[in-house]
Amino acid sequence: MYFTSNCFCRDNESMLISAVRDGIENFYVIRFLEGTYTQVTDESGIDISHAYFDKPRDLLYYANGHQIKSVNIKTFEQKLVYESDYQFSSITVTCDGAYLLSSYPFKYLLPETIKTRAQ
Image (cartoon, rainbow, N blue to C red; front, side):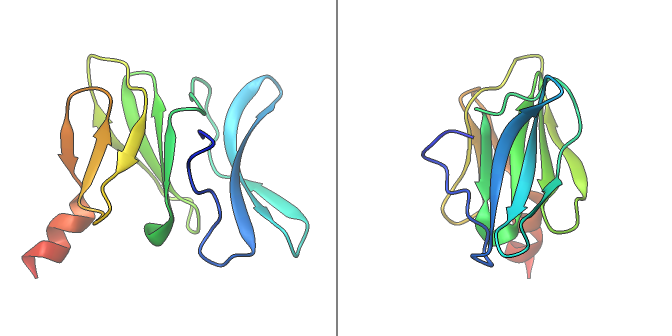
């Protein structure tokens, strides 16, 4: 993740980091009080500098080539969010959590928001 991303988790006792282990870049949650870490992604091709942590929703969004994926750092549920013919780079979520944005010209309404706005 880029240094401007907030990587501290809501519990204020853990932090999301990226690291290269065995030559592959992936994301991990470090738990300070326990002194442990848990790997939250397990795939090659992740560009760790093109990721965004949506702290209120415990979701990490990251680019892997032509795909944007998400992983819930509490449940470890992974989803393919968007796929394109273009390679993605920077990723962010709007302040209201409604849209996922990237430097590739698209604006994706997040499914969680659709449910919230329909109620």
